[in-house]
Structures are given as structure tokens and as C-alpha cells.
Image (cartoon, rainbow, N blue to C red):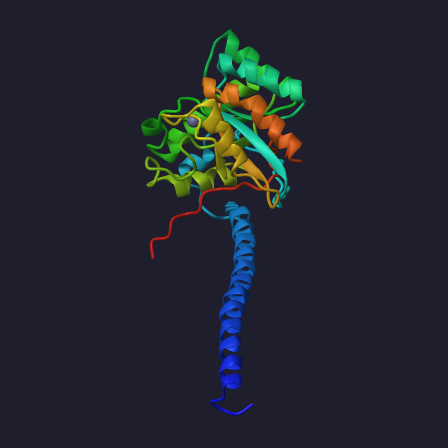
Length: 290
Ligand SMILES: [Zn+2]
């Protein structure tokens, strides 16, 4: 083949066309592999976001609030938390309410367990439902007594006082000392910027484990419906890690969506379970200021 001949140009054109197809194809494959590697890494980092324990060393001076409510501790708190890929932890905040009754019925119907982060509702219904939660094998956790952001996040002392109220209420209603909790608004929110690090450190020093979430059902958003709750959950779960799903036992959308959510998750091979303090939290990252 001579340089400049028709054959030469034919070969040249074919080579160029070949390269135009080959290069983007190889590029796509490489990017796909890299993308999936980074996603795995992201999930791992997300799940490993456990904040270190803060214990008082002998001789170290105590902060006054550390001496408050000495009985309010969780002695059985494993340091090593596990990731359970393919498990979904449904969690319900702000109950017990009359919706809790029906949610418990649905959970029983499918024989699955869940977690309830309760608030300080008093009265016969609340007492009975807290007990029913525990008796039926679900986990009961602290959400706070008042759920009043401005009051709770005023100071570590205010937070501890509120926590102690709901902690003792749960214990007297159920006989169980709660070991896990969830902050109203999540661990880092617009109301607790000045105090969250101190409160988190103090609660972890006492052995409690807190759980934010990595799937929000958005069930208390203005336009939520049974349909949006189902989709928000089913579109966000995968088998690569475990999922902690935020829901509320306070509205029709959640209650209506629950059977479809459970049925679909079970059919897709997920396990539904109640949280324990052995499960690795999926907590919000501390913001960076640099
Ligand atoms: Zn809440």
C-alpha cells in the first residue's frame, strides 16, 4: 500500500472510524467501573460515620452536667457496630398516637419488627402502646419528652432534663431502659448548632447510641401521600448496605403506605428488623468549616 494511494486513504478512514467508536466505548466502561467503585466507597464512609466515645479519664475534671442523672446511662453498648447489607430498619417518630395501633397491627400481620422513637405523651393510650411496642418485640427509643426545639437545644442541661423525663417515663411504662435515641430534627439541625457537639459527646459518654437516617420517607412533607411515601422508600434502598428509614406514626400517608412498603421490600429480598445498639448508625456528618 503506497502512501497517498486510494487503498491507503481507505485504510486511514477505516482506522479513524474504528478509533472514533472504540475510544468513547472504552472511556464509558472505565468511567462506569470508577463510578461504581466510588459509590461503594461513599456507602462505606457513610456507614462508618460513628463518632468516638468520650470517657472521663481518672483525675480529669467533670463538667457539672455530667454529674446529673447518674442513673441515666447505658452500660451495655458495644463499641463495634455492624453493617447488615440488605436489612431495612423502619423507624417511626413522634408517637405513640392512635396511628401506632394500626401500624403495630400491620407489622404483626407481616411478622416484621421496627423501631419507635417516642415522645412524652401521657394518658392510657400512650402507656398501653409503649408497652405493646415492647411486648411485640419492637425496639423503643427516646425521641425527647417535649419535642420543643427551642427548649431542648437551649443547653446540654436542658437537653438532659428532657431526656431524663422521657427515659423514666418509658422505663415506668414498659420496664425497659431505652438504649438508643434520635434527635428531633436530626443530630445536626438549624436549632442546635451551638450545642450539638457537647450534647452528642455527653450522650455517647453515657453509652447511648443515636440514629439519624439514610432514607427519608418525607411522610410529613406538605404534599406527601401514600404514593409518595412508597416511592421515596422503594427508590432509595439497595442491597449494598443497610437502611434506616425515617417515618412518623402521626399521619394517614405513612399508615396507608406501610403494607405496600413492607410487601415490596420482602418480595425484593430485604430483611426488616428492629434497631439495636449493635447496628451501625447512619448519622449526619459534622459540617466542615474549612
Ligand atoms: Zn420528631
